[in-house]
Length: 145
Image 1 (tube, rainbow, N blue to C red):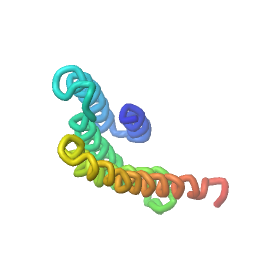
Image 2 (cartoon, rainbow, N blue to C red; image 1 turned 90 degrees about the vertical axis):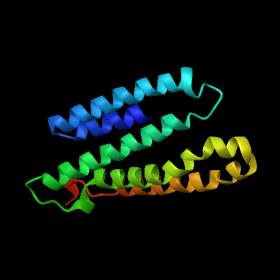
Image 3 (cartoon, one colour; image 1 turned 30 degrees about the vertical axis):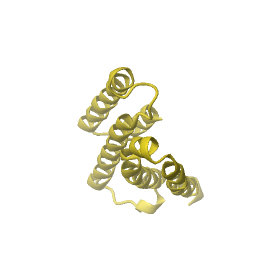
Image 4 (cartoon, helix red, strand yellow; image 1 turned 180 degrees about the horizontal axis):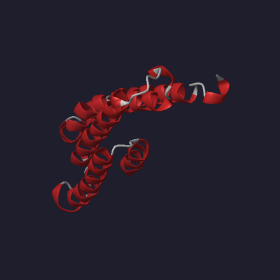
């Protein structure tokens, strides 16, 4: 999923420096995820370190995209750009997911009942993300104007 998000933000960003940052972050995440699975957390745990790293990287992608959007010379109505809504959904999901993932292994090991009850909170993050994705698909296309 995170490699797909990297490819998405890489394809919409036009600045060469931002593209290099995205490539570097994606390669770093890929290497860290493999190292995490093999040597740090192992395969039997929820790889929360990888998820924390990936959530942080996605937040960087969103900031790069929004900074590029801010620097554009042509003024656009931001609410009419579908990728802004997708970026907003990703921002909310990954920002709220950071504290949840940070304590997930601890809760799984010490308080499994509480960890299971927090899954509804996680599902609400996903719900908010997809509601904003649906809003992105409802943005008018240039032919509809």
